Each structure stands twice: as C-alpha cells, then as structure tokens.
Amino acid sequence: MTRLTRRQFAGALSAIGAQFVLKSPAQAANVVPTPRFGFDNVAQRARDLALAPFDNSVPSRLPDPFDAMDFDTWREIRFRRDHDVFASADGGFRLETFHLGFLYRRPVTVNTIRDGIATPIPYSPALFDYGRLKVEKALPVNTGFAGFRLHFPVNEPHIHDEVISFLGASYFRFLGRDQKYGLSARALCVDAGADRESFPFFREYWVETPEKGGNHATLYALLDGDAATGAFKFDLFAGQESTLEIQATLFPRRAGAKLGLAPLTSMYLTGENDRRVRDGFRTELHDSDGLLIHNGAGEWLWRPLSNPPHARISSFLDNNNRGFGLLQRDRTFESYQDLDLAYENRPSYFVEPIGDWGEGRVELIELPTHDETNDNIVASWTPAKPPEPGAPFVYAYRITAGLDMPRLAPNGIVVNTFEAPARALGSAEPLDPESHRFIVDFAGSDLEYYVADPSQVEAVATTSAGRVLRASVAANQHIGGLRALFDVSVKPGHTADLRLFLRAHGRTLTETWTYPWTAPAA
Image 1 (tube, rainbow, N blue to C red):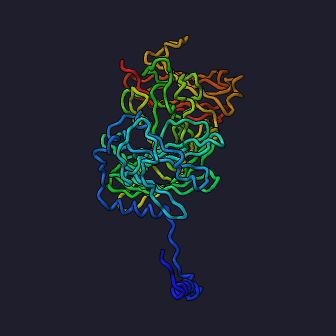
Image 2: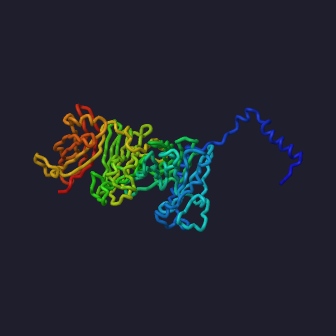
Image 3: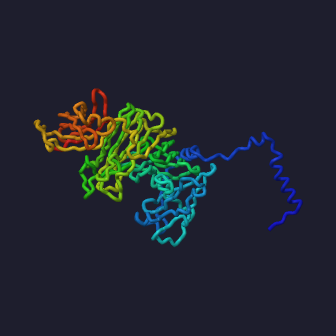
C-alpha cells in the first residue's frame, strides 16, 4: 500500500477542488455529454457498409465439437437461466443467446445498451449447458453467437416464455398469448422466387435494457447483403396480441434487384382445398391457410393458400396498401389431430404500413413441397419503383401476432374452400363437360342474420377466363353462416382468376374470396 504525506494529500484535495471551483457556469454548460447509442448509429454503420465490397464469408469450419452436429444435439445446448443478461435490471424481459452449431455457422455480435452505452456480450462457455455434448477446450471470447431471444411472462405472470427470437439470416419470430411458433418474418427478401435469390443477414444486434415492469423492449439490427445493407429498429410490445413496430433504412448496393419488404414466410402442405399431398391420419398440415390483403381501395381480399405442383407467383397490384398478412384461420384441433405440434395455435402475422408505401404489389410465392419442415410460402410488398443505389430508402410498418384478430374481419370471412368436378356433386341441370364447382363457406359479422332466409343474399362470382355457369347461396347452420356454390367452365389447361363475395340489397356482406385455378388437361 502507498501512503500519502500530508502535503500530497492536501495537493490532491486542491486538484479535486479546482475541477469544481475553476469552471464557470458557462464553461460547465459547454461540457459535451456522451452521445447515446441509437438508430442513427446503426444507420451510419449500414451506410458505411454499403460503400465497402460485400463480404459473405462464413467460417469454413466451427471449433470442435460444434462443426458437425445434428439438430437434436444442437438443440440440447441451453443458455443457463442464472446467467440472464437482464437479471440485474429487475425487468420483465430476460435475454438469452443461441450457440453456434448445426445450420447456424455465421457468428453475430449481440450488444446490450445500458444508460446509452453499447457493450458486446462476451462469449463464455459458462453461459451454456451443453447437455450430452462434451466440450473439452474453452472457446475464445470472440466466438460470437448464432442469435438471441427474449423471454417475457406473456402467458402467466410468473413464467417467462420465449416471446421473440432472432436466428439465422434475417429471420425473426415472435408470439402473443397462447400461441405456438409457426410462421416467421424476415427483414428483407431479395429476388425471391428466382434462381438468383439471395438471403441478407443480420451482422450485429443491440438490445436496450428494458424498463422495470414494462412490456416494451427496443432493439436494433445491422443488415448486410449483396443487394443492400440496412438499419432496423424493432419496438416490441408483448401481450395478448404482441406487436412489433419496425423502422427501416435501406442502402441499396446494386440496381435491378427485386426487394420484398416486410416478408413473411410460412408452410402449407395440405388442407381442405388442396389434397394433393396425403399424410396419414392428419388431414391438414399448415402454419397458415390464407393470405389476407386490405388494399388501398378499402377492399378485403382472402386468398386460400395451396401446395402447387409447380412454383407459382401471384401479384396483387395496389396503391398505398393498408395491410397484408399470412393467417391461420382454422383453429379446430380435429382438422390437424396433432397432439405435439398444435397447428391450431400457430399465430397469424398481419403487416400494416406506417405512412404511405405508394404504388407496388403484394407478391405471394407458393412452392411445391412434400415435407412439412419446408417453408414454401412467402408474402411480401414489392415497390413499383425499386430503391436505387445512392440514396437511402426509408419505410416503417407494424406486425401483429394474433390468433383470431377480429378487427381484421369487418365483414363475413371465408372459413372453408372446397372444389370438385361439378358432376360429382349432382345437379338436375345438364352439365358442361368442362364445368368445375367451388364451394366457399362464409361466417361472422352479420351473416347469421341471413341463415333463416339465405334467398336474400346473392353470390357474386366472376372469372377472368371462361364463364360462370351458375351460383347459389345456402344456409350453413354448422358455422352460423352461409355456403356459396358456383360452377365455372374453363378450357382444359387454361388458368383463370376466380372471385366471389356475398351481398344483400346492394350491401357487401363479406370479404372477397380470390383464387387462381388451372382447369385440368383434357
């Protein structure tokens, strides 16, 4: 220990006092505070990154034993709850990181922000329980992570369930109450549906320390890719219907890329309108069963999903779109009969632009699949005028995760879609050999009023090719709604866009059912 003399001690006190005495109020006012880390910092990094060559390098191999492992082994690596990053903050959220391994080989940096200062979370083997995996050599502190997740008592007051996760490329998923993970969202898709599709990824994350007792968490992410870089701000509000408010600034790297904004990714294998794939006792298998669009003209469109034999892209032109989403409407366990996967509890995601998005299109991509583990559905917004290099592209939107979300159904909604050759259903009228019958069930809103007298309701059916032969409406007491039937005749091998809605005395009663259909070859 070093001892101070009286003279040294007095000198130290004088020096300390001088710091306070010699500064005038004007001088004190000129002290520049330490800037707080925020979205502008991430945007500047994205701008600088866009000016540099794109680096897509991924480690050729991970340290042993993480280089070659299957999903089950990787899944056993658990973050230790006693190392929760936010435990000292005494807040409602808890932060856990994902370990590298399996498909997740690209390391990312995860930072926390406390009092405006960003600090990276250092990797440490002590953060994880490795299960049956034998780790003999400690990994360096700069190993990084595969991603992270936040936990929050969204279902019960004293149980912290996973409420949002960021893992792989730019994918993220989040939940509301009584929901089980199904579909995912992405920050950006590039040339989706084409052979040249590329996958931008998040290089770094920053998570603000949440306030005590609150349900709001803020985080930032730095996006990198061959077509664009970007800065993203996510404001999560966890609850019965959790919402994410997203602010984004893109910096395009190259011209000509088709950028899909606010993309959603889901799985559709089989359902009541598409029996092409059979899977034992389970009659339906899907994370989402339809695309819902609220277009700029105020019309609500419902497009049932399918598992087509060949890749199919559908475009819905629009101006200042009001919202779109991939929904899971069938909430009946008997439709799925899966005790473990709980498809009836998969969330629906609905995107709502904040501000005007101008002209563009909602694009739906449906890819063929024979396996429920493959995400084969993508929905996104593509601007009519693509962002060009040289100028930032700014936009914002909100995603809601919900189950039934009644606010998205101002009128009656589609609950079932069936199709079959018209001759198979019986009719007293002569049949056109090319006719095909579609059956659509509508329920909700004011439709139950008309169950006693469906003759008051008209089925308005149209086709872009061929002709509609007949249309009718019948009561369906089992759903408290109405069943619409119509027959359409289209030349073999030709494709038609079908539309149907119900109205009574000039008033529209339902959303508009829309469906692309290709008549079977002769």
